[in-house]
Image 1 (cartoon, rainbow, N blue to C red):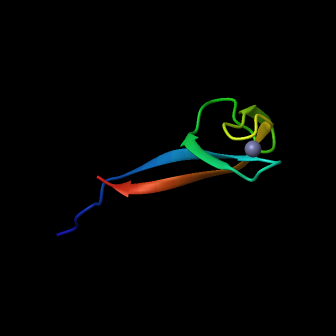
Image 2 (cartoon, rainbow, N blue to C red; image 1 turned 90 degrees about the vertical axis):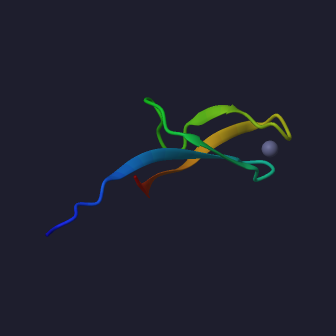
Length: 60
Ligand SMILES: [Zn+2]
């Protein structure tokens, strides 16, 4: 008997501030591309860039 594991993949976007290095992780949304400016840093108010987009698989 074969059990098929149900998995879901959730995409995340990591934003990083180029000035102070603060990282922020949030769920990926349409229109996210690497190295585009995505908003203001909470810490120093400089622009944050999208540094990484990745998927996490979780067992359901
Ligand atoms: Zn910053």
